[in-house]
Image (cartoon, rainbow, N blue to C red; front, top):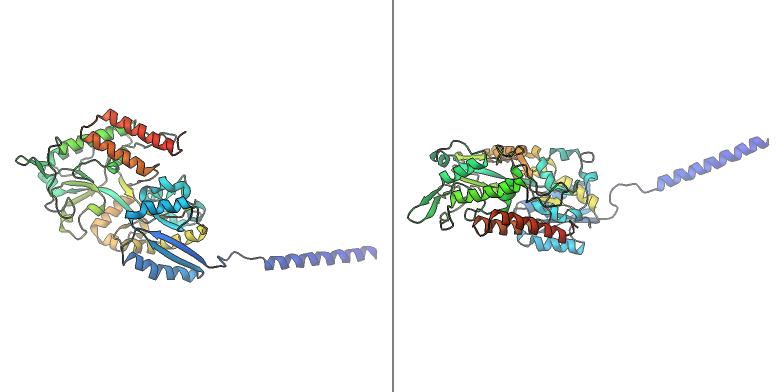
Length: 441
């Protein structure tokens, strides 16, 4: 009897504990999203007024709120004119918008102050990330982690007027440094009476100075060169690639301007390769090219820049991609919801529409439909971007490097200093910048 009584008591106790455990599990809160209203603030500079902003506010936000009714979205419409000061202020204060629209090179400036998002946006968490052009994801990453999502791909192409090329004796664009120098010299025309250009064989961004830090970096990368040595932080401007690239920049300048007394092209209207403006080839993005409805496109060949494979075995065709993107600052208290909103804005259909409002190429390759493929120019650009895109990304202290390069290139290309001094200055000055910033001890 005692054994039966003890068994009965144990059975009662087990039942009571089980009921208590079940009661606790039932009452435990479940993760079903925010239980209190959340406000996401989004700072945007890449938008077309009365188009992109209206679409985001009137269509995207209401659609997102159908899934997340407790989330409010507030936009701050900024401008590139005040961007640097505004965004620097947010990070200095450690508070501000939950999502910030950054420019192409800013992953190197703010990367370690942005939230790592691989666990929210990586392939395992969000398979749709596989649809983005790989080069665009370089810009939206830092230290192996996605920090946001890319809006568009705005690569630099080589645009050449086929009619002017043929007149100069060429039926195709050159594919190595030496041939480009010869091409630029042959296709350039200088008026003997005025000692000024009437036709310019090659324009790398700026027709007058031909000194542009983006173009110089493009030529280094096209050779397979890198900005840093194997440690990822020591500048590499004492490399063979940096040397060959800057020499090419100089030779190209002198092929067009034999000396600095030669005058520039007369000022024209619209793109420098538009009819009557005098340029034969232009290295730039679609922003500097003729309007998409211009008839001159029937006489324009679009190619990647091919580097110099004859002299550098790692050379490759590239279209240097400038990719603006949305990023999530690490200070945001709403990182999870910010990631959810970005995933919604950067879905296939929304990424397509976002770019359609600005007439740009979507960062998602599966969004290259509609207006992209209906226009032969955009279609060609999109195809080249998908195949040859090389991200303008991963640059440490980018604005300071820009200042150094622009100053030193200007001095070298105008014969104010020799090549050895120029490369030495770049290497030493940039190294000091990285020491001062704490990258190098």
